[in-house]
Length: 373
Image (cartoon, rainbow, N blue to C red):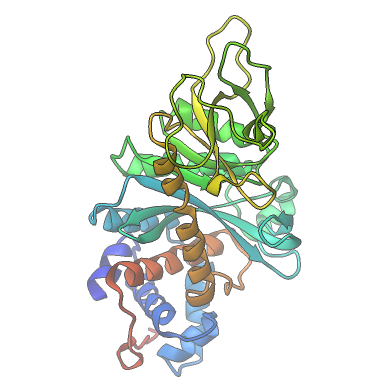
């Protein structure tokens, strides 16, 4: 634990910062229930000033989120992660309108409109574990274009509005800069993102393969000489048959065991130009009804069953996000600042990494005592 903490937080310049980071990390692993700063402080010291010390460390202290997450990435990379990079979405319900980036958003999975923050995270796979190694906070234009809000949240000038698909690309670019993994496949659920085509095209430009859940209304162009032009993904997979069977692959091969699928292009190529990259469209579990998910992948030469197995890994990403909510304090940060949000995400990611890779917590009698100077 001490070696892990020294390594992950070695970029923090001051001794008191590294001391607070180690204490906070230990508190996240050992404190039962909600992981508020007050509860964490109570578990490591009887000094009431420790609460303010930890709160200042998370919300105000000048340390770099990117440096800490890069160390976490390298720590995970030394354990030889698999060839899939998952991008997950964390919806963080909030009260009021002061928390940085808070806005009203329809959450497809709960079926409700929430007052929330939205964070996108990237995850590396180590065996059956998925480890969070980066985060990006979605900022609506109501925040990025409001000077008073920017000032109050201590938002850097470099932070501007990005759609969710662009946040996903940013996470991929940052992972690409940290890791030498040109064949890694990007896996993500963007089934409520109407502009997911921009993400798919952006990954194609980066020569990244993708397995992505797409909205049923996504426009695609089926492969074949008699192509009718763009149609919705759902209507194409339902197919022309009376039982809704998907059409056979246009290359004439027989469909391998697995979910129904069809080869497609994304629309948008200019007349007279060659079509864009080839993709396979398929339905999870063979279900094209309202409860199923539709997927698009560039892994057209892999069997549909193998690609569906990769798509199923999104369930593990969802489980990690649930664990971060329930056991690591994902929802318990009460601060309002932009740096504070990122610091909080770095700390809970470090705690989850230690627990996920080493399977250990910190017994109460071994929690570090934080003594203030």
